[in-house]
Length: 74
Image (tube, rainbow, N blue to C red; front, side):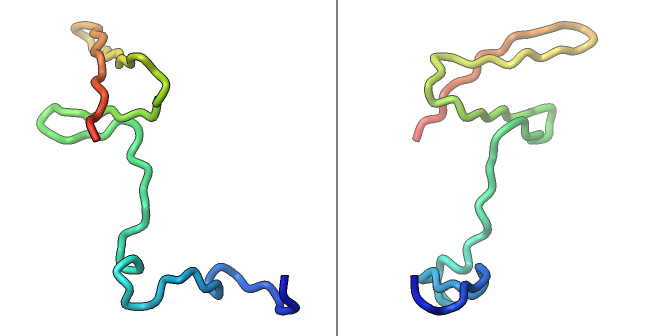
């Protein structure tokens, strides 16, 4: 530790300079949960790296369905 006073995060040198491509990137967002896509479609995304399988139970006035989710390919 140096003898300088600690600064807030706005004063830290994180290696990202104005004009750097990284400084123009949008903030990171966690894309987990249910996302309405429109046209009666919903995407369900979960973080379960150790799970062998995952299902979503969809309940409506007419029926209840269990839908298996598929693993994303990367």
